[in-house]
Length: 245
Image (cartoon, rainbow, N blue to C red; front, side, top):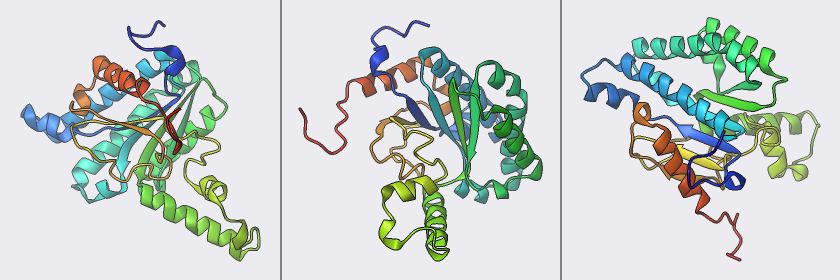
């Protein structure tokens, strides 16, 4: 599909990560209950993924549920878990037809058992798909990711698999939830709702990501907002610590 005017195909990001913020505020502004905001946010996410598929973006990671979100009211958490499970189940045929691989990162031992089973099934059934990679961060945080990676490296040292002197960035990266050699680090990280922070999301992986903070609440984040984020990304010169040419 042709790109929107002003965007260059050769400069499109390969991997876009999104902090989908603002569902609850969206609902409150309209006098609706919080679940309505999460349902609207889910619809927005589906449209966002469609655009990514149409425009040739290869990997999308969405921050669906933070570890910190477990402190929210149980009723709200249960609704979010149900929405995620329904999304994965209802989307299976589309994932297979579109060649989408689905991966889940985070501490999924804390989610309901039915969702755990669904996650295992979806990941297994889409593992060989390679056209598009959809990654959902559920019960995730960047600090959790790093702590678990450190534990894994320490275990390997204790077991004699590697020596302390052999530990480097590559070793740590391989133990992250995303296994950076398998999942490319995000080129562009978008956060909605006007908040200007990354809220403990992909801390290691976003070291050189370009950041874009959108004012729109996530349910209102549409095609024009995404085009604005991509246009901003394409205007930047990514240097990875080097000087400008």
